[in-house]
Structure formats: structure tokens, C-alpha cells
Amino acid sequence: MTAAIPAAPAPPVAGTLRAARGAAAAAGEAASLSVGIEVARVALVIGLVFLHYFSFPNIATSPFTGMDPHHHPVATFVNSFVLFFFFSAVPLLSAISGWLFFGFDRGDARAAMARRVRKRAGSLLAPLVAWNLLAVLLVAALWRAAPASGLFTQFGFDPAAAGVFGTLDAVLGVTRLPIAFQFWFVHDLFLSVLAAPLLWLLLRHAPFAGAALLGAAWVSEFDFGVFFRTDVLFFFYLGALARTRNADPRIGWTATLWLLGLYTTLMALRAAAPLAVDMEAADARALVDLATRLARPLGVAACWGVCLRLAALPSGRALARWGGAAFFLHAAHYPLIALVKFALWKAVPAETDVWMLAHYAASVATTVALCALAAVGLFRLSPGLYAFLAGGRRLA
Image 1: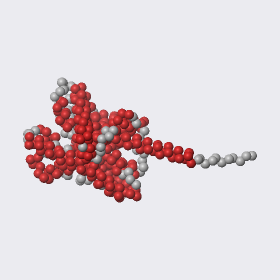
Image 2 (image 1 turned 180 degrees about the horizontal axis):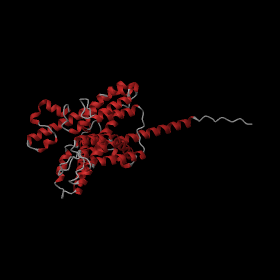
Image 3 (image 1 turned 45 degrees about the vertical axis):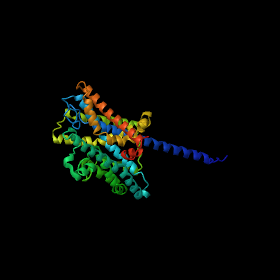
């Protein structure tokens, strides 16, 4: 009986090829994830432009309440639905920021956090000050030229009565929203970055208790005395938790479709809530708002899955190339969209639902296009100045 001949060990070349294939696969996954992040940045900021359209010029009802069953119900439903759908934008952007910030080795944690806090001071705090100071100067110039202008209501800032502290408050957002109100997100994100050492202690010693604590603060809208909203802090922590636990950030397409279908249905019901709920009743409104808030993690997962899917498509990769303009678009889109909205309203031939929705889409598209043109023009004129105003990003 012949003894079995043991298999010869794989030659070094085969092992090298397997290692190379593994490295290539890992690099491909990292590249896909990177493209997905850029897609998310651009798509979600465009979603915020839709959100900051606010109400139609001929409608008194706020889209934050839901549709208006009595006045243009179709147009107001669409406006409200899109607004509620993109409530997931800030949480997802915050989670991405947490994921990126905490991507360091445990042994280098202290030095890495110090470096990253300094870097975020340049990419978050510095442009926040610059953009809000620019807004103050523009409002002051407007006050000099037309002191009775109704545009002052867009800023909540009175140059005649502000004084030094009022001006600093409008720039930094100490006790009020920044004068460019969309920078509340950047304000809270920078505070979350400053809190990174405390978050790191929670992530190391009580990761899930920390998530429960911050989640409770988020649900109850407790702001710790310094945040405008704890959405940013909570989802920043969740992104950090996923990164430090080595969680796989990818979501399959089937799961994405289920999440997207569920989230879309819930946001449609929220937009249609005034049909069945008295939104003027404080208790009913509070319950509806709580349910909307609790649905937000579904939107985060669904939108992230869609962004990953887009990252694999040519259209998504084309969109990702504008990732360097996302911060600039976020910074520049308001009050521009308010000006565009009222300027284009003059061209609406009839106040019907169809024309209202056409105006809605045209206002957002025009605002995004103008911001993109301004970004390209400024980048060509001065790449350094553009990078400063765009949070350290450059155009591809």
C-alpha cells in the first residue's frame, strides 16, 4: 500500500499573488468607501438646499408642520416630505465626521487627537468665523444702503443695536444662531471635535453606555448648555463607535432598499400628518416630532446605502468629483436661495401646484448652479483662498 504523498507547500509566488489580490481588494473597498463619502457630502448638502427653501412664497404654513390640506396640498406635501427626508443629512454627515476623526491607532490616540483638533480648527472654526464675518459686513452695508429693507429678517441681526458683543455673538454663535444660520452645524461639529478626548474615554471604557447616554440626550433634546442640538454630537459618536469597533460600514443593496422603503413611507406619513393630527395641539405635535426624530437613524442608514450604491456607478463617481465643493455650497447657499426664490417667483405664471413645484426645483437648481460657478471661479482665481473658505478642500 503506497503512503499518501503530502501536498507540497505553496510556492512563495502563489502566496505573494494571494497577498497582492487581498491588498488590491482592500484598496478597492477603501476607494469605494472614499467615493461613497464624497457622494454623501455633495448629495446631502444639496438636500439641505432643498430643506432651506422653506415655505412657498404664497403659503403661510411652515413645511416643518407638514402639508397644508387646504391650500395647494400636493405642492406642500412634496415640499414637506423632502424637508423631512433630508432631516437625515446632518446626522449622516456627523457620523461620517466621527468615523473619519477616530481613524487612528490606539497607541497614538493622544497625539493623533491633538493633531486632528488643530486641523479641524483650520477647516471648521476658521471658515465659520470668515463666512459669518462676511455676512455681518454684508448686512451692515445693506443697513447703510437700505435701512428699511425686509432682508434683515433673513438674518435676525440689527447692526444699529448689536454692539461688539452682539456682533461677536452673531459671528461665533455663543448664545444665538450664527448670522449665517446654516453654520450651526459647523459650530456643533467643532464642539464635538473639542469633546473628542471625553468621547475617547467613553469609547474605550463604556462604549455602549456612552451611546445610550448621548442617545438619551438627543431624544430629549438636552443640549449640554453649549450645543444648538445634540444631533451632531450623538451621530458623531456613533460614527466613532463604528470605527473603533471595526464595524463594516457597507450596507447591501437589498437592505438599503428595505430601509429606504420604510424611511420613505414614514416621512410621507409625517408630511401627511396634518390630515389626521391636530398639529396645533402641543401634546400631539410633541408625539409626532418624537416619532420623526426616532426614525432618523433609519434615514441615516438608508441614505448611506444609497450613497454607497451611487459610488459604484459612473454618475456617482462624477458627483463625487464635486466633493471639494460641498462645504462651499453649504456655506454659500443661504441667503442666496432666499433671494433666488423670491426673484424667480415673479416669473411664475399661475399659482398652481405644478408651477409651484417647478419653481421649487428651479430655485434649488439655480442656487446650486450659482454656488458651483462661484466655487470654480474662486478656485481658478485663488486656490488658497478657496481652500480656506471651503474648509480646506480643493476642487478636483
